[in-house]
Length: 399
Image 1 (cartoon, one colour):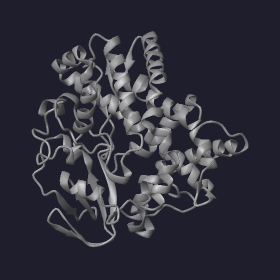
Image 2 (cartoon, helix red, strand yellow):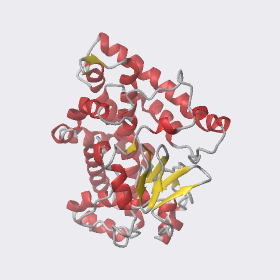
Image 3 (cartoon, rainbow, N blue to C red):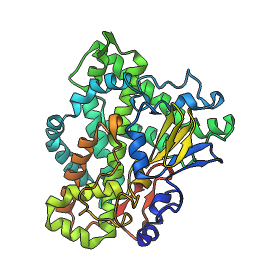
């Protein structure tokens, strides 16, 4: 593992990639005011108990740290909602991600992959993220949602502003510091909200066979969703529908570059591609952390956490817990079973997981078909996303 850290200059804030932790599985960080959960069985418990560990984390933030309600609303933001409302909202779009619907997307995913790689070939160089790993999944989810895939430059600007921040989450910062940290993210949120609100209004006038129309026309308990819920739901689908796959593709190619003997085996046995993707998800977990808030005093990992406390649950660290995974710092696609938590667990298990896995499998097979060797360029180093809660590359030049 030391070699991969040094080879790609992995940032220090991605601590779970830099060798085993020596601390306890659950501990309080007095500097940030946050409880951190690192252990696999402890995360398993947190993610499986939404009644105790709520996704509505905004309610435990100090009032002076909250964004102005005129600028920011989480209504309809499904990742922040608890049962029973969560189940009702999730049901609205779950039929759009069934195995049959996702499987039927395979020809379109393959077509897009070839078109994007053809474009890179004409330019004479392949930078995996910009040329394939970003535009492929964002185009697919944009087409499902019903917004122009050609606007993907806008989507990337907004996603980068919201996700690629290198600031550490803390409850100890002043309101002014928090507002400064969140300024660009809030600006992007407002722009994206306005963009999707315009498309939603157009769907009310002219319905189409797309996800946005489904949201506009959906009813919960006999009532249509309010405008802000439609927009926020669409934001989640658009962002979550591509960011994870972008990181997954980059991370998987990075692993094949780091372990060329493994790349040879995968080329010879394409049936192993899904297992390689699953181990990539464990080894370099894209969304490495989630937040939760306790609803009552609870014992976890041998310590007592009071009610109404903010938790950071570190999926990336749990996926390297030696209590669950033998030799956790070894990239081993032969792990069976491989019960990683990269897509979460329980009621908030990633709705788009089947789509992400399909996009990864199709794109990786085509890359292996079209390139004799997937290799990084030592003269143009890999760049990692600076966010301390994400594991992924933002630039991956190949030669």
